[in-house]
Image (cartoon, rainbow, N blue to C red):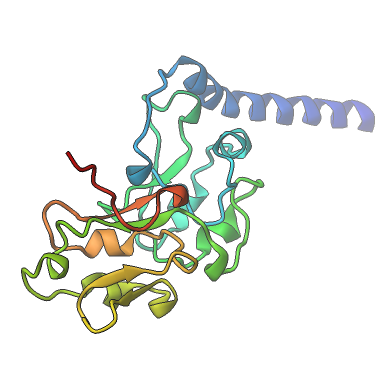
Length: 204
């Protein structure tokens, strides 16, 4: 009798889990894939560097979004394709504060604990042809003031205390500088590290 009772409970538990996961699996299969702009689609801190591996590891539980204090973590919806229900951050709306709480609650290897200085969400890039201090249209310094890593990630240009310069080895790409930038065209954004910290404009 005990064995039969155990098997019945096991069947019920397995069936319940399968039913719970089914909508998530179907959503991934039925949703169309849409290409995302990296600058508007950052993975949370501690995420696997390989995005395909991250998507495969993420189970779409939503715990990272629930615990996030600034509520900056969003989730791909119907247009996400295989990435449906996976978390991302758009720093233009709300940036990451590097609190690390999402790392503590992820039940899989999709997001793991990483020291704050070693996080790699991307790299801040400045368009010097639009940034107010760089075009001598006034003083600002908001991006430098808000950076949680201080002069490890962003400093003022030597001999001009208001022109921001990204320290590429120290910037982790949290996006707080993007969120606070007062310029309507947002001359600072988060890009893939290989793109560098200064926008390169084509001549001619």
